[in-house]
Image (cartoon, rainbow over all chains, first blue to last red; front, side, top):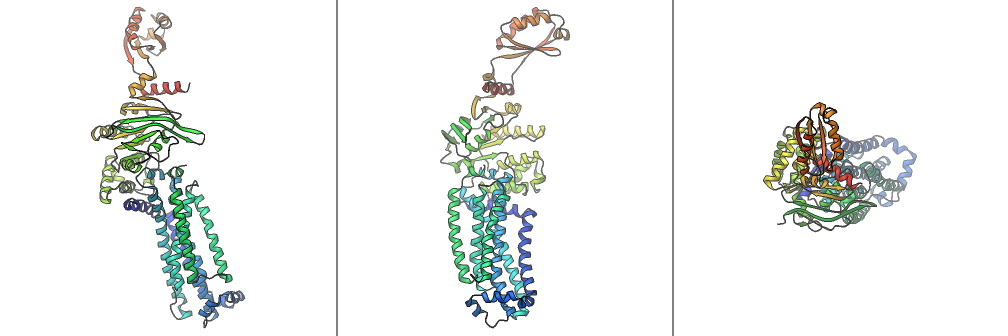
Length: 266
Length: 319
């Protein structure tokens, strides 16, 4: 694999993303409003939430090992901590999925749609370099936006929740596992899915729609957390992250094996 | 080193039940300009894609590009070939970035890629727009930019698809002069697909006509003209009276009908156009016309153009 060619294609894709407000602004604004609004609303409504009868039900559903961890906390603290540290962590996976699918769909299916891909196919870029470059150019911004959101989320959570807890408690270990293992793996999986779809669909919109179904398992994961079936604790996050990594390797193998230039021109 | 830039024999490509290329042969000598002519949908784009390994032929025959086997040495070939097709440019990038990035893909260091990109943009009159996004460019500017981009790898074989489409006459002339100069000075080979037959006749060393995926004729433009027809055309300028029915006109018409070597005659405002079976009949025609007593002002042999030949060959092939 020729690194210069690889980076030339990656740089081209990144320049294209940065060069258009149509892609860039949703990529930044949606996640930012997500990480700013959600914790702010929660923390400011914590007092009224604590009095809600549904909250008592939610606290009852919290698994025992977490209950021990949260012993000594008031109901208000429990609900805020549980939501900020566990429930919102599954929401946080939406960010890399959204960013990566939007860029990947634009970069692969979008290039096909705009008929710019053919020019690239005539160059010495190999199939492997093309696939790796396209995946990387979607993965890097997904990681950058996710980590930026993580930092902003951390600051907001600690600043706004300080009066309630009297100490800085974020990030917790499960969040490090999330950001270092699960988020990169999930972003890769969603990009790989888009790349696989892209050679079979006509445009980026179609690719985006199909890739949007990825949010469904996340919704299930969130419901599962609310009901106490599963909680995004550190071992769970690491285990799911490892599973996704295995899936990613499988995806990459199938993409490289099944990649045909002529299919991209149909 | 092979003398042939392209040596493709028996190339067939089928898409479901459509045969886009049917045992087509393409032979192009190094340092020459080759034109691939053909109606829309005749298989020209498929030919370029197959010869560049973008799509695989259904039956390959044997394809050698610049001495390299297409199926085995595709990377060697791509490193030496530049392709300008109707594939779009990156509209959200600047003209400079469109070229520079391709230079880097072809192995140039970033600084060298930038330098060459600026040189080519200068050459194609785009230097003052180098930093502008392509989305604001006119069709002609985009056309010039896509050709400049195809030259970023300093290719020895260059494919150009309708290179003068969208260019004004002056820019077309400059581009064609550039192509002939580069081909002659630096031994670069050009493979051009175009519908502009007048330009192709001027610029091409050899050409082939592709109809329904089959190469129906090949050779130099003059050879194609010879293949299209053995006849010749002579325009005889007469006094207005003779041309439109005055003195000698009846005799001329009778002569045209009775003569074995006059295939047809068309009357113009002040001239008659004779189509003869062969060139050596011209002196006999002049003698016969003089004998009718018509006022003959001048006689001019009208050479057939590549366009005439193309139309004749395509129509003949389609029956």
